Length: 174
Image (cartoon, rainbow, N blue to C red; front, side):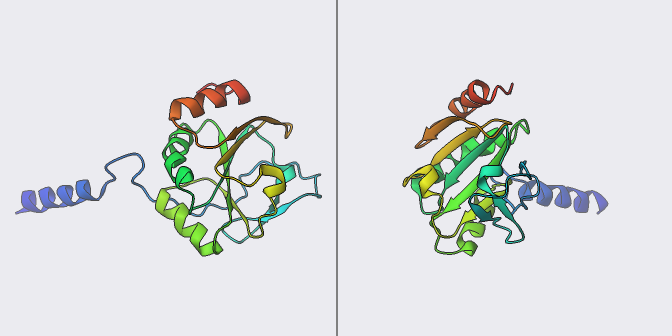
């Protein structure tokens, strides 16, 4: 009887485990891990998707990959697996900026559903259009001095492409 219960328990546990690296759910992560230059007070202040803090975009310091997306954007959805693969290395910081959502809850739902586990800022009024332009996805690579070292306009098509850009523009060995 004990063997049967143990076997059943192990079978149920195996069934509950994710079947791929991207099957786990994300979490709305707080923005306290975003590196910022606290002396910079002027700029565009964006609320964190957890709705507990704000971050001034111009104060963000890297090395960091900043991905601008919208849940409604099909190319943004297509590149999420590549961003998740990069995040799984734990070698580079990442920040998302969710734009043009119907509301903050839609952004939260997307983050959880897609398995995103990095901090996400929420652009409630499309104020970042002046920085990033009109289209998404957009991915910026920012160094430790706050300098944008590269702008990827449009879809990231592979994990290799993304990792190559991190190596080249942020000088991070993956």
